[in-house]
Image (cartoon, rainbow, N blue to C red):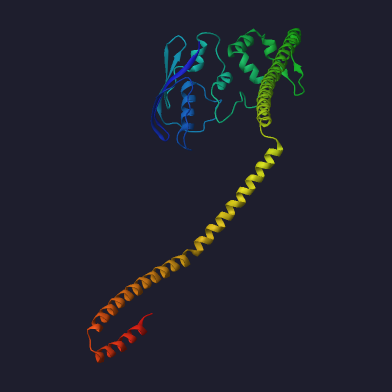
Length: 334
C-alpha cells in the first residue's frame, strides 16, 4: 500500500496563525527566514509518527491540526495532532497493517530535515541493523527460551563468559550462534558497501552517458560547421578575381578622392557666398545708377530741345543769355 499526503490543516503554528492546503504529488514551500517552514516540518513529524526521538526538535509546537493521507486504493486516513494528547496511531501502525511492522530507523528516511539523511546517529552500526531487522518481540522470545543457567551467566571485562558447568555446552552452542549472527551482520554491512559502490557505478555510467551525448553533439556541431564552411567557400569561388577586385578598389579610391575634392569646392563656394551677395548688391546699385543717369540725360535732352525751340523765337540779347545757360547745362552733364 502506498500513501500520499492529501491535505495539511493546522492552527497557531508558530508565525502561521492558520494553514490549510491541499497538496499535489510534488509541493514546494518557500519563504523568508522564520516564516514557518521549519514549524511545518516539525508539525508533520509530530503528526505522522508516534515516536519522534529520532528527530531532535527544532521548534516547540503549541498547535492543533490534522494531516489527511490517501492510500493507493482511494481511502483516506486522518492523523490528528494536539499537544499533550496521545496519538492513537502513527504512520508505522498504518504501514504495518499490510505487512511486517516498519521500524523507526527506516521511518526516519521518509522525512529529510535540514539535509540530514543519516538513519542513525553513528551511521550504519550493528546496533542499528539489529534495530532495523529484528523486532522487539524477537528478543523477548529468545530470552524466554534461554535456560536459567545461561541467564545467570556473567561476562568478564576481558570478554570471558562465566557460566555454570551445566550450561557450558549450551554456552558453546550459543557462542557459535552469536558468531554466525555477527557474520550475517558483517555480510549486511559489506552488502551496504556494495550498494554504495553500485550507486556510484550507476552515477559513473550516467556521467559517461552524458559525456557520450556531449561528444555526439560536438560531432554534429562540427559537421554543421563544416557544411557551412563549404557553402562559404563556394560563395568565395563565385566572387571576382583579385585583378578585378584591385581595379574596383582603385575606382573606389578615385571616387572617394573626387568626392573629397567636390566637398572641398563646395566648402569654398560656401565661404564665397557672403562676397557674392555683396557683389550682387553692388551690381544692383550700379544698375540703378545707370538707369537714373539715363533718365536724367533724357530729361536734359528734352529741356535742351525746348530751349532750342524757344531760342528761335527769342531776341538776340535773350538768345545770348540762353546760350550762356545752355553752356552751363552742358557742363553739368556727366
